[in-house]
Image (cartoon, helix red, strand yellow):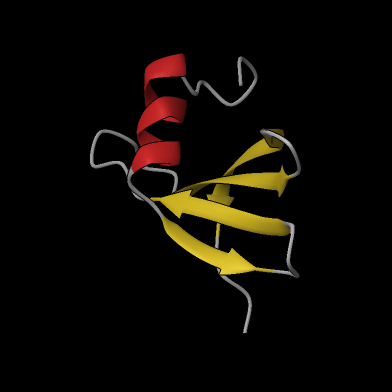
Length: 65
């Protein structure tokens, strides 16, 4: 998050108001456009187990085909 200049506030907003794409039943990507940023979508790769686990956070993200 520090390397990509993504704040905890932005991460919370990403996890609360998002677009989602599932890889399978427990793995998916959550993405959101922030008007205050100029680096495309911010995306979190997450796993849903007993808890929601954020594996990584990316910027300059684009949905694949």
